[in-house]
Image (cartoon, rainbow, N blue to C red; front, side):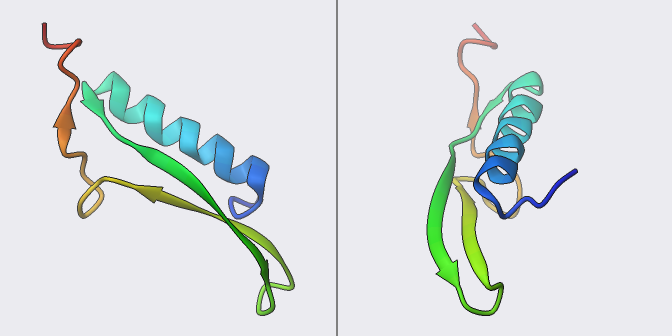
Length: 66
């Protein structure tokens, strides 16, 4: 897998996380945050933020359980 801090890599990871939890019956909100140029990385960075707590989703997918 390529660098997950790039925009493309972060987008792929976002999709993987969403798909994984959707298949398990959970809704997660995963957003990409463009951090811009980071001097220590010497490049731009895209972060991933979610509404999960300690890596676990908080909401059950109501449509999957209906």
